[in-house]
Length: 365
Image (cartoon, rainbow, N blue to C red; front, side, top):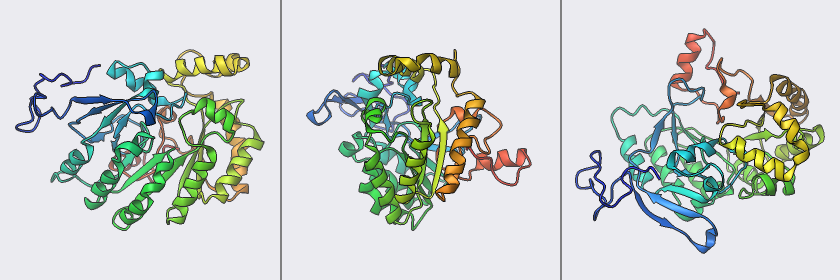
């Protein structure tokens, strides 16, 4: 695993004074220990100390925010299609089962975040959580990193958003409601698959449809206006009118105000894992999917996305839901290749808007 400072003898020139070596006092960037526990059978947690908490989104990115926080790497939701799978390869893990079972935990992230937020140069720009791996995956039940992150952001006057599949969000709703008195807080729930059997197969570690609906309802009852990402919609599996209509009806009843939909993306790393799953679970669909996502293609063809939009938009209106396709008002790059988060105005967005002579920042969807 290519982790700087993971050896006990490693010397870290960038560490704080007195913390340069893992011998006795461990480096801020290194591996502390690897942990297994009966409550998480088959999962190994690699506890690390991080040098930084705030990640600056690269300038060319189509993301509508400039800063993110990722307390975990890898994800026990184990979604077969997850775009972030390839990032695990940077740690010399594989993008398949290792992504699901080898979870990196930044145990000191709250302390590091507080230090970064206190810097004079911090402009209190919007920070997005849940844009890579889920901050409310099951590991959060063990490590409880999010309460400290929420408190640090709110205390510093930094607005933020959370995108999650995790029902652990409910644990922190009182804290989030308190934070929302000080800063803007946006919550979004990702819910893709209504059918429990299909969800068990393609998102085996994620909460059920009903559990996520209950989380949307709880967020609404707590005073939030939750957005739901009905995505990815899976061609020939979850894209028929009856399935989408049923999903939107239940989302409306649960208190969702806005729904964003989009077709499946298959990035490298996720694509190979998805092909293996499809061949095992739905071999009859493999030729159709290879036609939709040939070679290195990441996105479904524009024609399919238009067809999907023609199916879903009338249903959104029928159920009185705001929102639309992730393709709507997309930036003039391949923004659909990136995982969306709640739309916010950022310095990057304003700059893009001025460059395009647009009246408002371009949106990701």
